[in-house]
Amino acid sequence: MVQKVIVVDENNKKVCLKEKNAVHIDGDLHRAFSIFIFNKRGELLLQQRSLEKYHSAGLWTNSCCSHPLLSEEGSEEAESRLRDEMGFSCVLKKVTRIKYNLHLQCGMIEHESNDIYQGVYDGEVVINPEEACDYKWVSFSEILDELTQNPQAYTEWFKYLLLETPLGSELSVSITAQSVQRDG
Image (tube, rainbow, N blue to C red):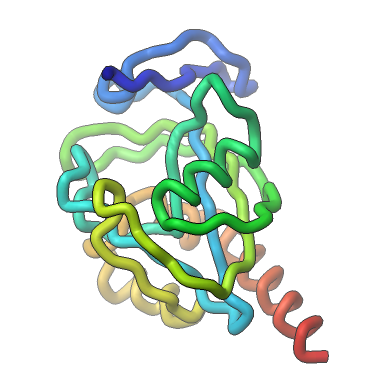
């Protein structure tokens, strides 16, 4: 079955549906979501994308990312995808929406209107091998160091979101505050 994504205008209003591969070749602006899961120690859950992915295969990225489908809205869609890819669910909070237009090494384009969600989870992770081949929990300071020292090991959107937007510092401050509240 050919997967379609929602192509949008600059105001995130639906324009049409288009085949996912074609959108990434043509560079159409389309809806996406990215999930950042932290544990109670403030470590970020990263996944290594499956080696079978048609782009960015084997690269490390945020906890989960995908494109919304027509059947679900908002955080419900993100929670469903998290459960499918990483084998768990948790409460997700929408943090922001970020637009970007990134050219991937494979020649494809990630031009996305990306809703960013974060959550806290401390249980078991059971990855779906069709989506991810590994996972790890990493402190926020370690991941920022790793992104600058070994950038080729990470997806373009993950590097952009953490290094080129205020999101990296916002997530860091948010999770630090959560850790302090739990400890206090």
